[in-house]
Image: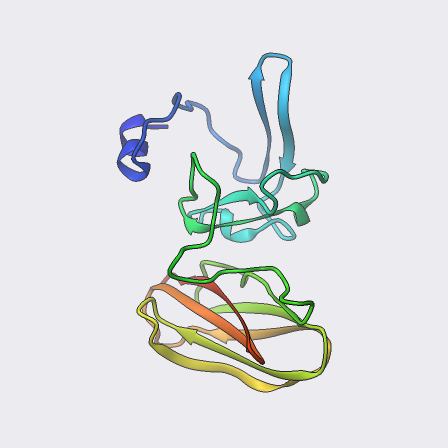
Length: 193
């Protein structure tokens, strides 16, 4: 809604300014090349199963695939952006300093985004494993210093969740990492106090 603020944050000017208001409970968004030439139209919500961290948490709502082919009204085709404030004008890619993935590695496990995110004081970290195996889940600060181990145990195949309570940790961004054998995946979480 402000070209100067947009330029200061992203380094380029937008094509225009949006003067409307989006509904805080969800909206229909239609992207057109010109009147009558619709690129996409989606009706989204700000509640699960839609990514909840995009509702006031600073993350953008982005498609999981670069060129999505599925039903864009299906929440499973969307995710929160990797970076707070999104990445307009370019693909939403993981940071080069942090390997971030929601994809399974050789079918062995999947690490999902925690929810809610940002959170205070409790969040849930979901993951899946494809076979009985030892899983280690750790929390790091942005400098890569290990803060704590959240799980280090054998898990049966299937879907699992770990509840994490921020406790005395200060507000900010943290990284959680899952390891299974030689495979590793990481994601970001934000504590707001």
